[in-house]
Image: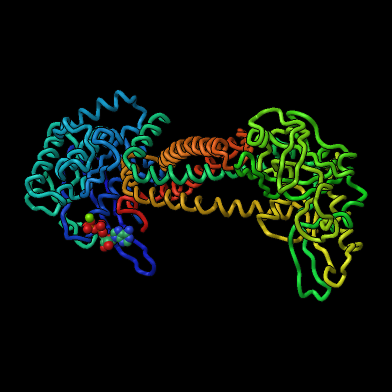
Amino acid sequence: MLTLNSIAKTYQTDKIETIALKEINLNIKKGEFISIMGPSGCGKSTLLNIMGLLDAPSDGSVSIDGVEISSYQDKGLASIRNEKIGFIFQSFHLIQDLRVIDNVELPLLYRKISAKQRRHLALQALEKVGLKARVDHFPSQLSGGQQQRVAIARAIVGKPELLLADEPTGNLDSHMGNEIMQILESLHKDDNTTIVMVTHDDELAKRTERVVRVYDGQLIH
Amino acid sequence: MLKNYLLTAWKVLLRRKFFTFISLFGITITLSVLLILSTALDNFLYPSGPEKNNHQLLFIEQLTIESRDGQSNWSSEPGYGFLKDNVRDLKLPEKITFFSQATEGSSYINGNKIDSHLRRTDTSYWEILDFNFLNGRTFDQAEFDSGQMVAVINKKTQKNYFSGENPIGKNIIINEQTFSVIGVVEDVFVGETHAYADIWVPYTTFASTQFETELMGGWSALLYHSNPSILPQIQQEYVNQLKNDFVTHDPEQFHKAIGGADTKLERIAREMTNTEDYESNAASMITMWIVLVLCFMLLPSINLINLNISRIMERSSEIGVRKAFGAKTGQLVIQFVVENILITAIGGGLGLLVSWGVLSQIEASGVLPGADVNYNWRVFLYGFGFVFVFGLLSGTYPALKMSRLHPVTALKGGVR
Ligand SMILES: Nc1ncnc2c1ncn2[C@@H]1O[C@H](COP(=O)(O)OP(=O)(O)O)[C@@H](O)[C@H]1O
Ligand SMILES: [Mg+2]
């Protein structure tokens, strides 16, 4: 469902040029659960951002569902992200000013959906992560594990085909990390969601179907 | 969708109580000060009392005299002697009046000391200024010429001296002179500086005639023309008089006179800017005045813009998240602008209330005697519009700036 074709990414800051990625070829099939591993600074986040159309590659192309993303215009990308992709971040990135339910509804705000339907879908997603009882809490009133579960609910509320998780357990202890992993596994198994997860944890990586290793901006096999 | 934006905005405002409070405070104070000042100015420029025809008037109330050697100069109100020699014979004004400043005088009634403001005037004073007579009349030319001890008093004085009873024909003693009351007028707002007083008497009742030769101090003149467009010519005539035909009895000491006949607006502008340039027109002074007001408005504005920027900057992670989940740049701009509109509207509303409250309080408290504040809804509307537009602008710039952030940069915390 997602194909990366000789992707390269270089960052130009002042006079220094950083090569974050080079010659990345990767094909992710529908329903796959992939983990990406590699040392810090090797380009994992950059890779995930390019997959998620948050960042444009310096070279190469990305195709989603067989359609090449050729133009990186804000509007078009925003719609694709909204409909097909869900993000989970290491630091949760919940909006502190909004209650749990409003955080989860957020992706649906950018679709043409009635308020009632939004609420319904958000409750459904919260139920999946076991947090239906916390809809009216603010993020600061939740534990780290609970916050990440809210973030997962937000990522899946729009029923995206692709979930991108950048070190989703990185800020959590192993017990909570395990809970998060179980949720991702069930999303994969029950809903056939395609998941790409960056992780430092070998144990978690082993539980995925395929491990992709990045070293110094390149895939190693 | 708009409902949604408003709802989100409302939630954010409630959640960020501190920011909301500071913002509201800033907007409310700015608007209140603006409104109170402009209402005051409006009331000042367009008084509702005896000076209501001030668009037909020029004011001579300030004079600077230089000695021949240029070593010394004096500034004060003109004296009667100066006005008699240099103003009385101006050709263009239809009417001219000389009158003393209102001076404090006291009298004792049943052992109680009562302070009043006493002003001495001529008869054209009563023709030029439009006093509202509640009872009786003012003095006529014959009474004036013969120095009759007659007085016009205001309502307040009637209340204080005569417990509200009809005072016509009764005596009133002030500064050890006894006057017979011949008329009662409505109280005058102290802001109408030339009309304001408690007791008015003919200036021919002065105990001594020394004032008649004094060049400086204690007097003012009004020049009247029914056609306001003639006023600039009168100003020119007066300036020429001082320049070319200045009459003085002591040319060594009092060699050169600098002064002007100002319109009401020029008077205010001159007081604000403290300038003695009588030959430039009102426009430059008014421009200066506007610049001053703008500078004054600039401070809170910059403050609010700053506040807005830092508030939106703080939310860079939110911007990143919203973009990641499909928000378009335009939608984010609208979101922030709506938030801003909401808060400025609330602040604006509060500002209207506060200034209305303060103005009624001022009117009720009697701090300004005779104040009859006219709530000028036009001023209120302009003020509100101004704050609104400004709030919009101050919110739009940071909104535009932050909404354009690259999502990855925004997620990392934006530009610090
Ligand atoms: N915005 C940026 N500007 C410059 N260099 C960057 C930027 N983002 C990432 N990099 C660099 O690209 C490399 C890969 O970064 P990243 O993808 O975040 O690594 P990882 O997620 O594997 O730790 C690093 O060397 C990092 O310093
Ligand atoms: Mg990373």
